[in-house]
Length: 173
Image (cartoon, rainbow, N blue to C red; front, side, top):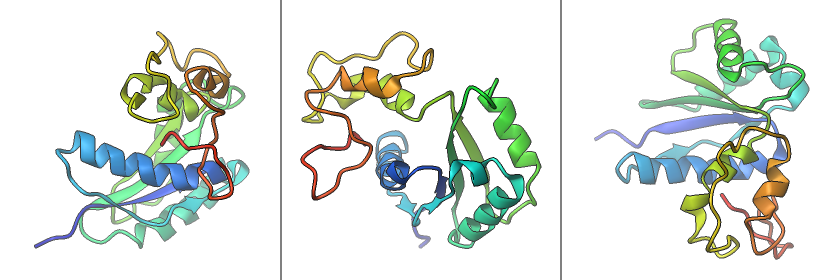
């Protein structure tokens, strides 16, 4: 019997290190018919290195070694207005600049901010105790900057990227 698929993520920020593990697990359970997905330790690559194809390539090679059997490497990156006119085009160009690893690699770039994805999923977050019962996704969650603030408006408490034991604030992911 083969083990569960392994996703080895690469992320930019400290907040995404924990959030990506919860996000990938949730996607596996909800969208892949309750499939358990093993999430390897995320590799954090700061935004400057994330934009350097050589540094990104090194991180991809490290994470590819953590995948055995099914699975692959997932690169998640915020888009910035200054260097992203089309996230799909940028992701494709970053992927083309890499050596072909032995595992699948997907590069996903948020249009402006990671939190816009949470904002888009507001309707599915009602069960979370920090989310207002009437929270709903805006028509264009990626349309403007300020997703964190708009997300916080849908919550009963302050938004925090990660949940820590020292804080009473809760993470949405």
